[in-house]
Length: 160
Image (tube, rainbow, N blue to C red):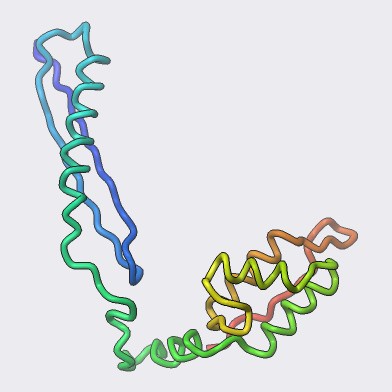
């Protein structure tokens, strides 16, 4: 009776411009010696991992920043949302960041440093999307608790 061993190895890598590439290799083999399933599995894994890693070094096409964002409206409001995301930080976002700073006795320099660490620029240089991510990080780092144990910073829902 032949025993089959089926192995698969896959890897996905993130690339610039919200892109990624992936590669997967699968193999099916018959075991000659069923007492060495662990050894044969380890050998297959190592072999598949090397094959995938060797291929992943050839990234092929990597889109430049902004690729696919040519400003055309696709009918679902994407163009308008993209323009809003590309716009600078809003006054409401700045007010919320300042409120978190004030209510948690956080130094503005610390928030500026976090902004630089996350996005390579100060708070006032952020896009709206980046500012939103910074605010999420501040909520994580400085949760404000009320009587029921839930944070009471409230964000208004996004408008479309």
